[in-house]
Image (cartoon, rainbow, N blue to C red):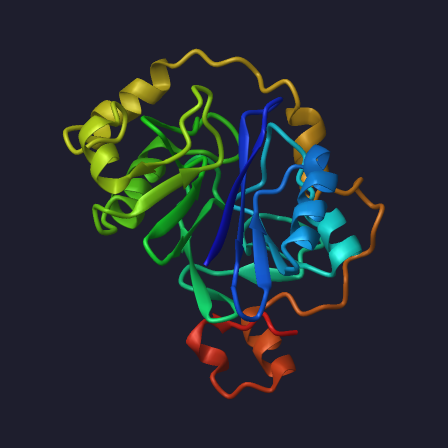
Length: 262
């Protein structure tokens, strides 16, 4: 699999480009609007066809480039069906699969940081968004966040993956690029193996966190795939997986499989 980890220094945000070596189909996870030209250039240099722009959640700290990627490269914007994004092309449910050539990514619902967080899992890698960070986790004090929900999401949907699974978060503020299930079980002070749910809730309630400086800009824009609210009509492309499958003429529409070859 083609794999690139991309960084936005202003927001300490990671984006991830994954592609198939044969078909050249690709997905970009958690794009950043200010890095659109960089990302588009890389996709073209690698001779890739971007078929999906995936979002782990509605970000509060940066504006996504997903809408621009759809307009310029024809990618479909895919987010959780609980995200509230008005102009997404595909609304994902827990357990749905995204296909990129011969590779598949499983969408796992991991709410708690927000009510609509998703982790994408493929071939020994998991892209955890803000649900699980390296030696930390996302905050739970806005966007319907809930500490109890986050604890159970991370412990049951991420840290139960094989211990060798490489974990790639949406952010890191100390220059770290990846972790693993084994490392986080052992070393994560918030969600490691020794932490109880009640102590985690108490810890999260004690945090004194500043208001995200770009939240008032980012959330309204990200509810329209990074485009100005109302700037684009909702596309006519199907938003439910079964409808997409019918459009493709597949017979296994109930199998939670979403093909990229469209």
